[in-house]
Length: 291
Image (cartoon, rainbow, N blue to C red; front, side, top):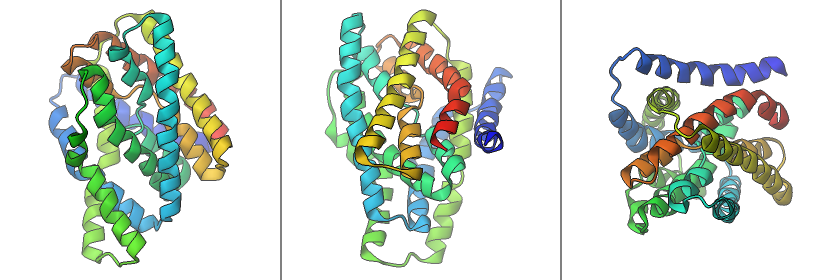
């Protein structure tokens, strides 16, 4: 078991470390360009090729997507009440606590822990998370909603196109599948390297608050993931993927939103860094539990 866990953690840690060291050495890294490339091309291609190649049952995909939506529905009121009791800003911290790093960390972890089927299920969770993050998640720090943002998310079209082929029973041309596999293959390593680059550029302000928020994100995330898996009757890979995705650290995007809308970005950055460090430290125990 220890060897299996190391096989999962080591690639994730090393890829993130490459980005971290790269940034600390002062080497150029165009984070905006890479993020745009991964978001607009890499991720939709990864979603499409993975769903088609694994031949995931549409019911299984929809079941995990439903579980993701339920997890968000639980996170929001729990964290809202916590922030209200602690007299902390909802606009600054509610989205940061609700939306974990299910892309940069979640997808690679689920792939390495559970293989292609695990990645396909993780993509279902990731898709719902992204759709909510770029609508409700942005609306909290911005103070206003923008439902039209959904139509500008390329991942949505990758999922819809894959579902058309899966539900319709159509065969995807080899050249199409091969092209999307190659382009999708850049997503996971670039996500992890960019995570390391981002962590190297974020400061830690308000260590005590950042630690409290990090423990809430990881602890509540694990409990909600485990609880939903029990309620929904998930077992095996489904159970493991749901718990892993729910228990991911604060997503870097939350810092970007906080910075854009001037909602205590330095303190949100601290929660991103601290929660990620705690997550790396607790991953062996978490993986032992789900594997």
